[in-house]
Image (tube, rainbow, N blue to C red; front, side, top):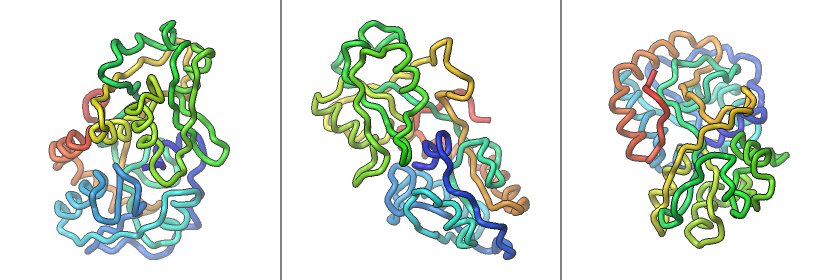
Length: 268
């Protein structure tokens, strides 16, 4: 979700005081954005939608959605208001929900046209200085991503083009279109978005993981472990979901592969 980018650099919006009602045992109530591919969509075509269906099937319960655009205060207005109980994808470390163990880990990647030659060897590659490079801008204050900050430190002469997350189409989709049109030489994009939209580009694109430079601050990591989150106090639901994730991990991995999600390391 956009949330994976937003939580890293800005608050998602606080959860309201705990709602007294417990999560129903016969239905899995999902909080999701109705138009946020590759994660979720009202027609069920996002990979988090597929994972939600798989989990509901594994638990033998019905599936229900609370739809709201994933913007500021999304969590407070959905989970915090008691409309739903489950966020299918949140980064580990998110403190406003109870989390399962992570079920995948992904990373920001370098994205370029396949016919553009060798990818940069790292953030000190001298070729970066003459490149037009797209980056994602996050939140109302247009903060930039950890790899974009590394780029600013190591290749300040690069021509950086910012793509705000907010817009009629996802920032990654706009970046991919600009790469295909030759308006950019490369881009630094969150992996699940990069992989999904690269699969659908009008020209072949290439994804490459660039290692963080040695001076990258610890709080500006490039990769994030993703878990399922539930409302605070819903420990029993979290444990049921954790067991279901463990049993269906191979199926989840297949879903992620179908959507082009680049994975980092072994599944925990």
